[in-house]
Amino acid sequence: MKKILLTIMSLSLVCPLTTVANERSAGFHGIGPRVGFTINPDQFHIGGHIDFGDLADNLMILPNLEVGFGDNVTTVAPSFELDYRFRSDWGVWTPYLGGGAGPIFYSFKNGGSSSKLGVYLQFGIGKGSSNNRSGRFFIEGKLGLADAPDFKGTVGWTFGR
Image (cartoon, rainbow, N blue to C red; front, side):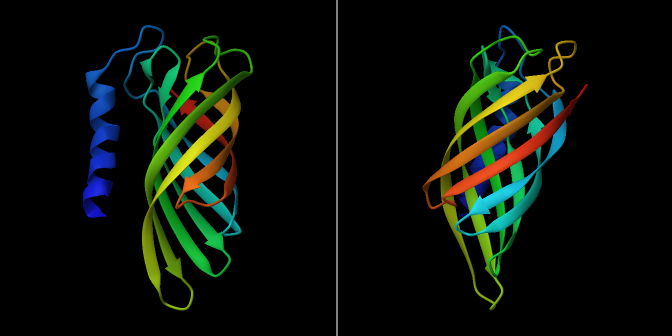
């Protein structure tokens, strides 16, 4: 599990430094909070994310960390995500579709713990500032495909440079 976590963290740091996109370059574009709910386990989650720009046209790199509370378990879920925006214009509401993967660490109230590699399919809509192409509000849903919560609903904001 440590190798998987190190690989994901390395990719989230190396990919933005080695690629360049036409519309929005790769690299640090912002950071922000996120909050939402999870189904199975039934939890409330909080977290943060980093906007590393575009890997290719409209393909955003967005690693994040979410911590869930409730259902007699605490969940820590770092995730490396790629999202495809269907429009290039940041000043309008733009749907996106993507996916992510990352380890999920469970700490149970009765003292046990476990970890799994979660895989998600996600969808959402966001509206950004057309001036800096980074600051944006988003609403997204995630469907757990493998060893992940069944559904996550999240809202968040990215504060850009």
